[in-house]
Amino acid sequence: MNNGQENMIIRRAAEDDVWQIADILVEDWKTAYRGIIDSEYLDSMSVEERYRRELSRYRIYRVAAAEKEILGFTWNEMTDDEDSDCEIIALYVRYGKRKSGIGRALFRDSVEIFRAAGRKNMIIWCLRDNAEARKFYEKMGGTVYKTGTHPWGSREYDMISYLYQLDELPLER
Image (cartoon, rainbow, N blue to C red):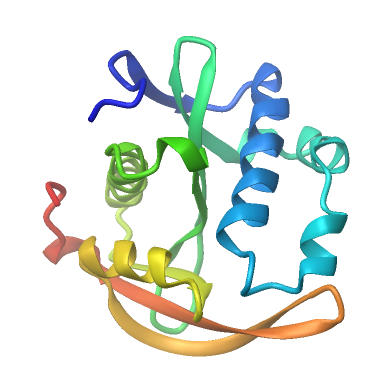
């Protein structure tokens, strides 16, 4: 199943991409996190508000695009934590385009960027109860690492991280 990625490229986000980035993020949260994150918090999310937030920081993202359609995006950071020196802060694929290779392509793009920068140990955090994300991160070679919590709205949510040894990670998964 190709799902619209036949002409997909991965590139830095541009200002014209911001509305679609906001739309993907809000749609994904409202769909994938329903039953995990409080409904009140999810229902309060809006593309308009998210657009305003992302407009000031869109340059941090890399997008998977097929012509003018944004299919997904990542946010990568170089870090100097105790056991990791780089992190995928966010990896989102438009909900209707999942399971089509876009997430794998974005993940591999991040790994290539980190390797080119000489980084060795990558970490990714996700909600502990997000079974779909956890399955993906495990399939991509991650090892369960640390746990923690993160606040959204008026609650703390359990988080889990995956650690990747970049030198040992095959890009084809």
